[in-house]
Each structure stands twice: as structure tokens, then as C-alpha cells.
Amino acid sequence: MDATFSWTSKGLGWDIYGDPADPEFAHTCTTASPTDPVDPATGEDCTYHGVRVDSKVVLPGLQDLTFGGWYSGSPFLGHFGQLPPGEGGLNANGGLFFMWHSHNEKELTNFDIFPGGMLTFVVIEPPGTPIP
Image (cartoon, rainbow, N blue to C red):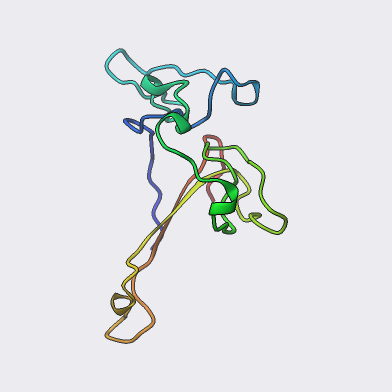
């Protein structure tokens, strides 16, 4: 089954679009109302506007990562970073991709037949990305 839902970064703790002081990531954040910190156009939580992701978590070095086809090379939504040759390429918009599933292979069954089971794949796309 396919599902489409709206996502915001409310309460995430860092600026999903990168440091606005960096010219590459320059952007604004406008709240919907004094009681709602989320920018209605981008989904960014303006409470954390300008808070860098690496101020909240220690990012691993490239030599400590395993790259996949959907990794953009950047922790920021809509941006790309450096990747080794031949890596990436399936993430045309700089989205954030997540796999939600069990790593217990015994649970990956359909009607007690392996392999199978439910695997859920979620992508958070930047605002303005056409969703067919």
C-alpha cells in the first residue's frame, strides 16, 4: 500500500535545511502563528532555525559509513554532499530516507513462508518536489 502524509520537523532540534549563515544553505523561516513554530511552506520548526545538526549529534566520518543508493551525502533536506564514486544516485531531490522494519529475519514471513513480511520505506522530500 502507498501512503502520503505531511511531515514537519517540529521538535527535531536542528535546522533541517542547514545553517542559514552558510551562503549555500541561506533560507528564511516564517512561523504560521505565535503558537505554532512550524513554517507552513517548508515544514521547518522555526524554534531551531539556524541550529546545526552537528551541534546535536556527532556525525561519523565518511570512512565510518556504509553508503546506499538513497544517501544524498548531506544530513540536510534538499542538499547533496560528497560521496565516493558510484554511490548515491537514486536520491534526485536530496530527500531523507528511512527503512522501518524488523531485523529479526524470522519475522519476515507471509503466511509462515520466508522471505516475506512487511517492510516500510519512507522518504521525506523537500517542499516543492512533485509527488506523482
